[in-house]
Amino acid sequence: MHDSLFTPVTLGAIEARNRIALAPMTRGRSDESGMPNALMADYYAQRAGAGLIITEATSISTQGHGWPNAPGIWHDAHAEGWKPVTEEVHAAGGKIVLQLWHMGRIVSSAMLGGEPPLSASATQAPGEAWTYSGKQRYDLARPMTKHEIAKTIADYAAAGRRALNAGFDGVQLHGANGYLIDQFLRDGTNQRTDEYGDSVQNRCRLLREVLEALVAECGAGRVSVRYSPNDGIQGCVDSDPDALFAEAARVAQALELGFVELRDPGADGTFGKAEGVKRSPLVRSIYTGPLMLNADYDAARAEADIVAGRCDAVSFGRPYITNPDLAERIRSGAPLAPNADQGNSWYTRGAEGYTDYPAMAHV
Image (cartoon, rainbow, N blue to C red; front, side, top):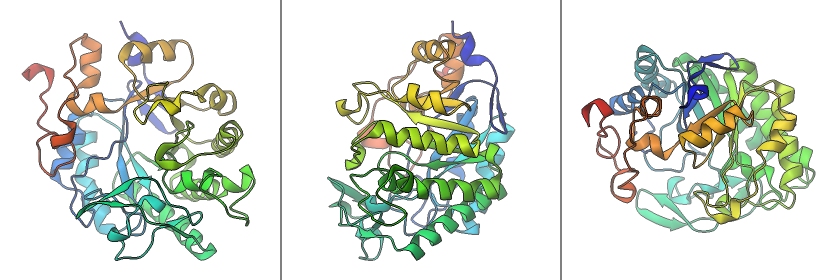
C-alpha cells in the first residue's frame, strides 16, 4: 500500500533505508545538567526502524538551554553521554542526527540565574515558559551583541564537532518554531539595524553563518536545517514570509545541505489554524536537494506527497511516541496505538509515557 515510503533515499551523506523519519520532539528525560542516559538510548533504539532519527532539540550552550531536563551538547561529557545512544541505534540498523538548539528569548531568566535571555532584539514572547519551579511569564530579551553572536556561532560549531565525535550521522540546525534562529529571521522579532537586521538577506545572515560553521566542521552532506515557514509560532511573525523563506531556501541551496526539513502544516496544524499557508512548493522551487516534510501526516498522505514529488521523505512526530515501531506498522498495515496521555506522562522523568509503549508483536 505504501511502496514509495519504503524505498531507500539519499539524504546528503546519509543513506536511509526508507523515507520515514522520526521527527524531533522535546521529551525531557535527561538530568538538569543536560546529560543523556540509558533510558534515552532505549527510546531511540526502539525507533530505529525509521529511515532516519532526528533527535529531540539539544542545547548548544547554557545560555540557550531553557527546557527542563532537555539534553545538551555544550560539553565533552555530553558527547560521551550520547555515545551509547548512537551505538544502540546503529546496532539496530538505524541512522541518527542530532538537532542543535538555542532557544533565544524562550529561555526563562529562572533558568539563567536571573539574567535576561538573549535574542535578536529586545522583544518578549507571549505566554509562559516551563521552568523547574513551574510556569513563568517570558522575560523581555536582551539584544545580542556582535561578540555574543560570534560566540554563539562558535558554540554551534563546537556542538557539531562533538556530535560527530559522539557517533551521530549528522546534525540538524533547529531554525524553526520561534527559537533563536527564527527570531533573527523574522522582522516581527528582529528589529536590528546592523548587518544582522533590516533586509531579508541580513536577517538570514546568522542562519547562513551558523550553517557555514557547521558545514566546515561536519561536511555539507551531514548538515541539515529545519524551517517552519508558517507564521506566528511562539509569537514569531514576519511581514513577508514568502520573501523570507525564499531567501532561507537559497541559503540551503548555496551550501548544498544534506536535506531540508519543513514543518509545513495545513489549516489545522498543531500550533493552531493561523498556519494554513503551505510554503513547501516555494522552497521546493529553489532548494533542489532532498526535502523532508512534517506536520500532521498519516501514511496515506505521506505516500501521496512522495509519489507526487512534493517531497522526498516525511517525518512523523506524535505517532512515533506511542508507536515505537511505526515504520513496521505502516509496512504491515497494522493499526496504530492512539496518542493518549500527553498531559500525564509524555514530559515526565521515567519510562512511563516514553519507553513503555509496546511494539505490535507484544500488543
